[in-house]
Length: 69
Image (cartoon, rainbow, N blue to C red; front, top):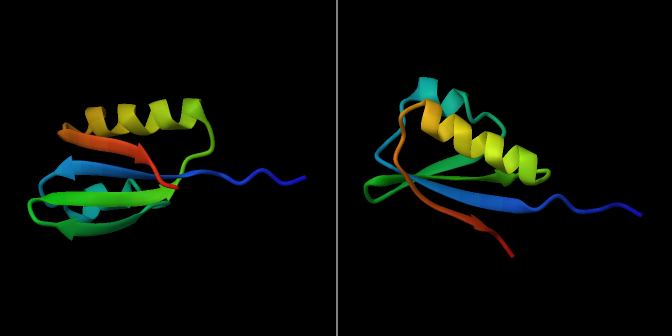
């Protein structure tokens, strides 16, 4: 039995540079208004916390994190 990896959407304020986007290589990114939306798979809770830590370490303002249906 294969367990599907859930996809998440992460919204951060502003337009991210190519260098910053590169650090989120496993995610698709697009700009919506004055924010960047990242979407991609997050394997488990530890990976989700690591992703949030990465956002914080880069000095980005986290607007929203949600699991996609």
